[in-house]
Length: 355
Image (cartoon, rainbow, N blue to C red; front, side, top):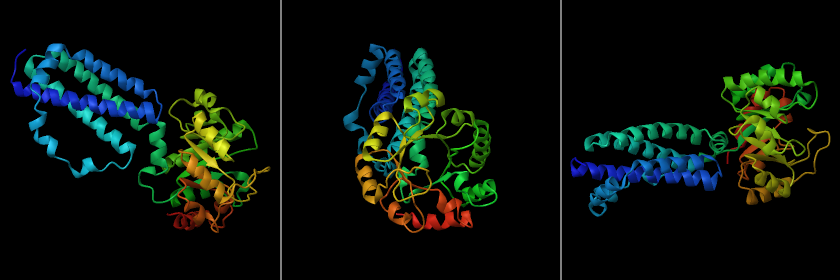
């Protein structure tokens, strides 16, 4: 084994960086998300161990100078700030990728061609891992609900033709998307499957135009066909694990709940967020569940870790109070769909739902 001893010190530092970065991602995936990406990350750590023979490991260890490393005394502003798990994951994935690149290059200086080749392959797997982690359901939900820098409740519009009082629903939906709706759910309780599919495709295309998450209500088959961003299920719809067999592992699934017990059950079942209500009396359902009130909402917020979408009877008269609970999102149906100018109503509601 040849080469400048300082090269082994560089290798040692970067082997540590690579292992540490992978461990953070693995523990997040395993313990926070209970996600299979943990196994993939663990496999990468195992691959790294296989690339290091005992002689190289001992040589690197002999060249370690942790006690005198000037890096131990530096702590930048960016290191001191981590707003949420997403920021932690990004930092550690980038650290692991950078370390892999350094190892790949420095290995060539000490006649470790196989190590360099193996680390290069691992580096490309890290790029794919990053896409998987950052594109995970948890990451999507955090981004869409604005959980990293929460300043206001997200505005969630449930679009249902039965409660629309205007003359051109598609035109009004385009206008409200432009005005700033954060989520748009298409709900259709009546009509044929083909009608549901056709309208969901049309509304989904609008949402993609405005980069707004598109939610399909009740129907995992239609959510899959129209490539919806989110599937939302009611209490009487499919179990989440069965629906996931249809829509795949990356599509977030929400569940409507009407009591603390249902909310806790939805969390245990694997929902990515819950709808909770009706907060106030609402005519938006033929057989509405009993009102849960603001106290019921606050109780759920205390006991459930998932993002909560408050729904039911919300309008200009009460939505500020509900948003003030720091709920993740407030859902509106009639207040927007039956407004004389729906887009203007979006603006008024948005002005009310900041914390």
